[in-house]
Length: 246
Image (tube, rainbow, N blue to C red; front, side, top):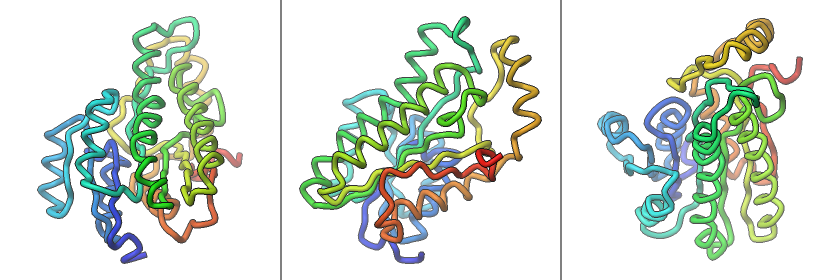
């Protein structure tokens, strides 16, 4: 796939760590000009020190002003968008979830994807082409992987993905999602609910096939973003080591 992204500009959110960092690095190696966005300037500086050709942009994706500034930093056409950034919810179930957790998780995991998609679409429509990849989750197809807020947000990411794919397919724009299972990242996956721990803890211990490395998800993202997936649109690609097949 070397050279698949030559001359193309791609925005990657959550690029300071985990799947976002691996994706940004992979796309750079494949020839893309990458705008790496993260809320942590320190993590971006560390990444930029390793990848000299990368363009770091400190950005809080829950702010429309900062999202607009991120897209503006591309200085023109954006060929690809990878919405990676996401947070967990402490596995809080419906009877225990608080409004702050609910709104924060939905804002980061779902609304940010809408904001970024909305911001890049005018340029993609003008160009007549573009590719968007959203990071969904195993939690988007089942109810036993997370708490209420995270589960709801990732189910909604799948709906957002399919809606964009359907609405703009005639204009040459593709939108797909990759749905990882357990991945070795720094996302806080601790239980804040004793009830959820008692119900979901044994279930996860019995069924989770193990933790994948971020690079394995990044490779799936690069494929969906590339012309090699030119006939793939509206797909939710499970990248879970077979977890969903069991």
